[in-house]
Length: 69
Image 1 (cartoon, rainbow, N blue to C red):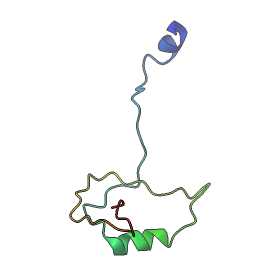
Image 2: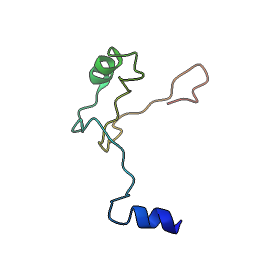
Image 3: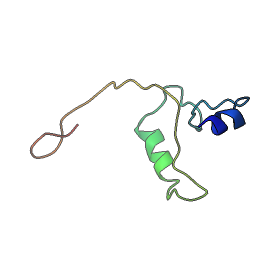
Image 4: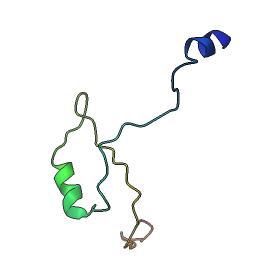
């Protein structure tokens, strides 16, 4: 453990997640469908990750036995 600490003592080792940026709260079904049409995602073309904090504005129960949102 000490050898690792010594080797990386001058480097920032804070974990991070690389994102595709923010949507600025503009996520709607149309945006979702447009992103989905870019699939398939995979090696060299990963699924997008956005850095926003979103707010749910509508939720409803669905299905024959409504247990899903």
